[in-house]
Image 1 (tube, rainbow, N blue to C red):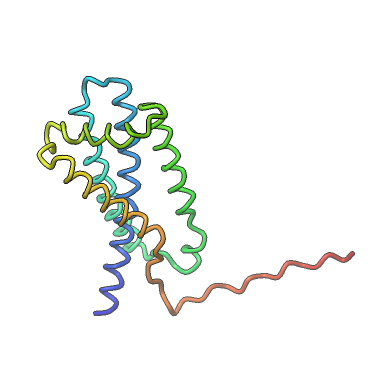
Image 2 (image 1 turned 30 degrees about the horizontal axis):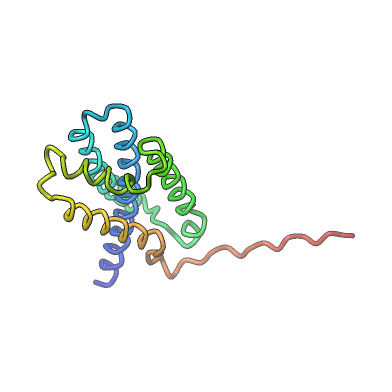
Length: 169
């Protein structure tokens, strides 16, 4: 039973990480599309929920494929995977999208996307408050999933690190 809980927990971490990255990518794409065609903001805002769903599906599929191929993260993989570099890349891309769409007006960085979501033709019924809660939850879970390291195989051992040869000086 404990193994199943650990497996489910690891799957949740995979899914939440990818959901957060999907949200960041979708937010950047939404801002770029808004800048290119501002009259379509009600439709363009659909990219955000689609990006979130795409991230969730990507996380599920990645976890299933890694689990089926017995390539779940091991101790070595955990230390070598560039998760913070990838997260940093997507955050920089999102900041660039904000600069492209709204310039340096930081108030628009918050109110602009929320206005688009509120006027969304499908999911606008949630209103600003609902979207603030959803976006806040996605950020909280995504950052926590990037910081947290899921359980790994305790029986696995890493190969010993090789000592660097000394200089014969």
